[in-house]
Image (cartoon, helix red, strand yellow):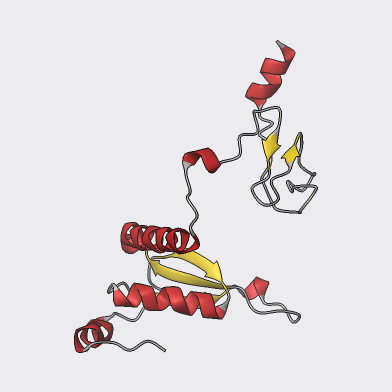
Length: 151
């Protein structure tokens, strides 16, 4: 449970209630209840109103519901900056660095799975690493590559 200063309490009291059915809201986070509540509190501390709603078609009798955190469309840039700062803090805490070079380049003959560090020549049909099952994505197979292959 977070403890708030008087100033933070004043900000929280001023937060506007959001109505998912009438306001222009966008999804900025999808997770379980605990993680959505953590992000909601972080946004509230910055004075950004948000609301948690359930995906009606993603509520499973066998597991936790999948929830989404919504914010006003006009707040999306501020939310992106806050989430970027959170992400950078997590990376720093874990001693991990992220860079553009971490993106998997499927145009190469081989790729290295960031999960198990196995050198791969291809991924499964589901876009996963055949060794550890980490989702890596799908190589582009668009018209441009097909044209180049036929040239």
